[in-house]
Amino acid sequence: MANHPSAKKRSRQNTKRNTRNTSLKARMRQYLKVAREAVASKAADRDGQVKTAVREVYKAQAKNLIKAETASRLVSRLMKSAAAAA
Image (cartoon, rainbow, N blue to C red; front, side):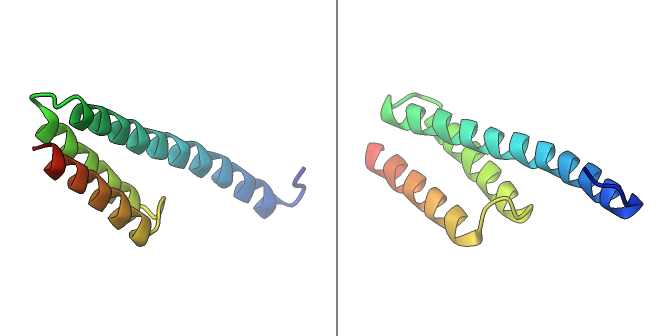
């Protein structure tokens, strides 16, 4: 356990950031999952689902939760599958 005041503060910050990052990353994954299912089932609202998922991926990338290359790869694969289903 941290004893120095600055180490205690750093511990609190890490806990807070970890909680925030975990929830944002989970949210991004959930939107991706919904979009993939919409594309696979050829749902009527799949374009909206894909658009929302892309927005969430780029939000995560902007907050440095995922790398730019990873975001591009995820979006590319999603758009590719959406185009093939259309």
